[in-house]
Image (tube, rainbow, N blue to C red; front, side, top):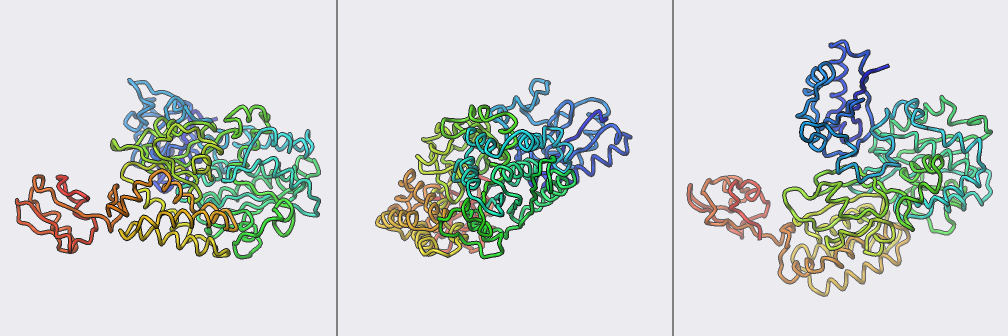
Length: 595
């Protein structure tokens, strides 16, 4: 029995910030001080507050240390573990008020959240199946196999109101019931862990922090529809998630929680991992199944739907990681508990990867219906550097931009669609006043053009033509007539593309045009980018009264476009300026402005 546990974040973000070296330092210091029999170091999944990583939490006090470096470990061991004195300089500021260390759950970041899918992330060692079992792990599977019929399982999922968390929001129980109705000698359960949206890392974090919850849920789904085989399709760029998922599958097999005759019920089920090569289109369910089969990742025409004819031509269900992570808790706590959370048509919680121009970047799980204002101002801590909130982008390349005027919109499936965006898998990018919305639309469209599989003409050709129009506008050559062309072309792409990638590709363009049309007009009519982002529309000017004549800008300029003598105002020759911004970034006196 250990008197203290040191939980060190082992998610991708903290690992990239040397959390492995922090663990090594703790083990070394504990051994040198004779504490390795009293204190245990545990590598966990993501705690959520990624902006403060690497994170270390010491139990039983639950002391939260942030931005820890390997060289800080010696002090934590000597002061906290040996002398019982908290190292205050490493505390997260919201947990240290008036010389009192408060609970992390009372901070603004956590108190507005409700963790269901992220229940065990940061609480357990994801590589230890016993710790998962200690937190009611595999109880739901045992209950299902020993007390319930497949029809009862499906009814519970239907009654819960759970909708797919991968983007479309299709009712999970309905999908399962459709597959269950189709007789076949073989059925399949698939998990989409491909997660290709820029800035999204929800599914990766769940698999890194709590892989057994997904394995348990897939086995439950297999029992419900009559499947004996499962596949997790995960991108190869997630090495930590792949390693921990494989370890979890191996351990589940060893404990006979996967394989033959699980819980002596006569039910057989096993899972294999299939690695994806990073194609965004393989997040579409039929393209994903093509890829698992070893074929080119292209969508198939529907009908038939996967519940009728999916993987290898057999009835198949596909849900994403977050959807599955909810299933064990729904089985254990009941559908009424889950459906009491959220809104009338969007039940439960949603995990978001909060990024962009926000103080507390990281992973958050909120009840459906929470307002965007709560996420940005309370959980996220607001916009840094005194800047103003301008827009939020949800749904990745398939979503849209929500303007500041709609900051009090409750976040759920229907509300987001009504304002021209969508839930998507859960990326939530915050933008401030320095963001050019035309440039943002172009960024997401560039991504879509690159990731289009090319199978259908509306997507393959239409998105390229749409991108050409945006490039024309940001280069200063656009016309007002181009805006009408953009709208017509966008609607054509949406209505005629074969799969969801093409059908939603114009969303970032249409939403920015809807809410930020004045910026498009400024680019076209005034030949200016209001946010000062679009390079071809920029001009740099030195403010004579502020220039000290230090010559730094002159020395930084790669094009010799700046002239002037020491201690005298300098000048920029705009005909020579290449608009690299080196002078603007380097000026210490704020004497250079963008126009």
